[in-house]
Image 1 (spheres, rainbow, N blue to C red):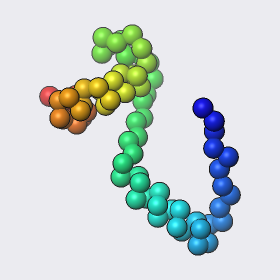
Image 2 (tube, rainbow, N blue to C red):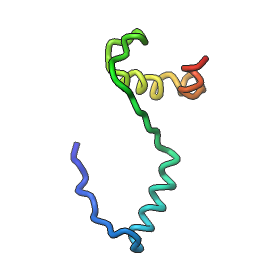
Image 3 (cartoon, helix red, strand yellow):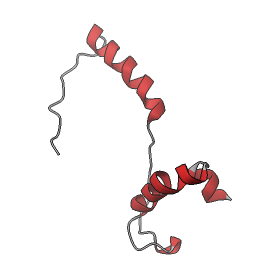
Image 4 (cartoon, helix red, strand yellow):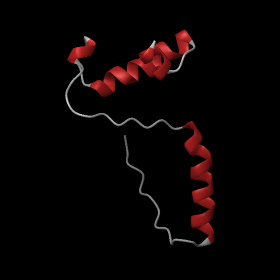
Length: 74
């Protein structure tokens, strides 16, 4: 896939403020994952932890109707 060329912004100008507002609005639909070291062996998974999280989010969460954190802690 192609990497977008991007856009140079000037802090505080009208275009910056407009794009920042749009980004803040869309951030509500974003997920952020911070993974610390190692693979997922203790989880019984041979791949990297990020792939395990992707499986939980994409496959299990919609089918179970629970958030990933609720599934992990129950």
